[in-house]
Amino acid sequence: MLCALSWWLAGGAMQSGPEAEGPFAAAIARGTLIVAVSPRPAPALNVGPVDRTSRVPDAYSAALASDLARRAGLPVEFLLAGTREARTAVQSGKADVAIAALPFAPDASVAFAPTAYTTGRGMALVLRHSSVRGWDDLRGRSICASRGSPFATRAAQSHHATLQSFERPLDALLAFQAGECTALVDDELVVRALLKQVSWTYYRALPGTIAPSPAFIASAGGDVATAAFIDDTVRDWHRHRWLATVRQDQASHLAFDMFNAENDLYCH
Image (cartoon, rainbow, N blue to C red; front, side):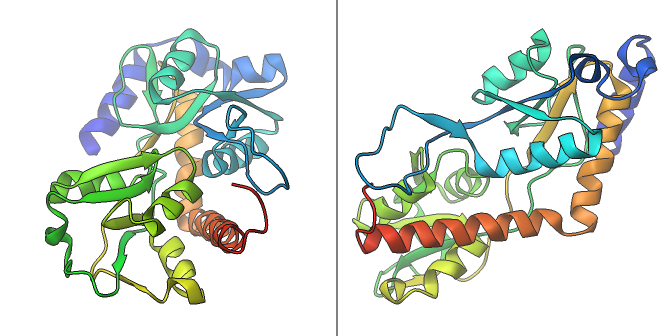
C-alpha cells in the first residue's frame, strides 16, 4: 500500500490543475456532489406487484456518498452506474466520485483514495444437517449472494465454488431457502441477524469467516486535494467504526425484509 500511496502522491504532484483549487472544486462550482453508485432494484417493502425495472442507489454506497457530501458541505446527487460505468463517469467528469466496488487501479484519469472502505467479515450459512462442514467443502458447489458482495466473490474464488448472484440481497436469501444453492455467503452481521429468527434454526454457520475484497473510492485523476479529503474521510469512518454502524443498519433492514417475505407481508 505504501507503493500505491507513493504513486498516488507522485502522480498528483505532476499535476497543476484541480488540486490547487481545493477538494471538490468542480462540485462546489456546480453546487452539488455527483456520486456514481451501484444500482439496485427498488425496495420491495410495498403492497402489490414489484416493479423490477425500477432502480435505486445501493443503500450502503448511498450512505457513504451522503456522508462524504455532508462533510464537503454539499448536497448529493446519485448517478446510477455499474463498476465499469462508474469509473468511466469519473473519467469523463459526469461524476465527481465513484463508490461502486472499484478495485484499486489508478491511472492518469482516475485517482483512488488508498484506504479501502470495505470492512467486516463474511460468513457462510448451510443447512443444519448438510454434509458441508467447512469452507473447503464448498468446492464445486454453489453459493448464493447478492450481486457485488465483497465477501462472496472472494469465497467463490478461494474455495472453487460457483457463484450465483442476485440483484437484490433479499432474492439471494429467498433462493438459498428454496434450495437453489448449497450455501449463502453474506456479511457476518446479516448472518447473525438471520440466525436469531425462528425460521432460520434449520441452518448453521460454517466455522470461520472470510475477509472482503477491497474496494476503493475513485475521483478525478490528478486532483490530489479531493483524493486526500476522501482518504481522510474513509480513515475517519474506520476510526469511529461508522462503517460497522452502516453495515449493522443494512443487516437489520435485510433481516426485517426477510421476515416480511417469509410471512407474506408484502409481494416479492
